[in-house]
Image (tube, rainbow, N blue to C red):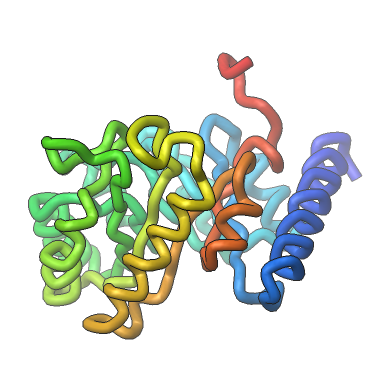
Length: 239
């Protein structure tokens, strides 16, 4: 086993222990929570190692990094999640490799994704990104739509060819009433998910929680956690 493979295996084991303990504490089964490893800034060689270690879901937030990495790893049994703010001029590329787009937050993006998914003859799973810090602009600091905009956007996704409405995603906000209150933020997302599922029962994915707060997300009921640093290490330039 290479040094890097041993490092990633050890980190994955620790994250797995954390998820399992959080599930037990919340009275949930371990298989109710899917780990998505966020591989941004790390090379395709790491993605390949992660696949060998049993990881099946990976995420990226920049198309210019993700597209070549996905192409290099096309032979692997992976689900690719796009989690970053997505500009419409990148949609054609993203629609070619992403299995899920977790950052759907405006009607124009839905229209573009639908057009390109149909063109690529693919079905894209879509999560509405919810901004719990949305102010007067109805947009969050890091993208996302205000809670009041979920219903209209969800209906648009559900009615768009090539797209599948899978659920909701959020990033714990740094400002506003939920700043520093991750558990409360994730519980609010769960309430919004419950409301969404009344109209769209199959939209049951809830993506929340990262390396620092995955326990709070699991406790609140998240179905997917997005972990990068705890698996791959601290990224260059981040301390």
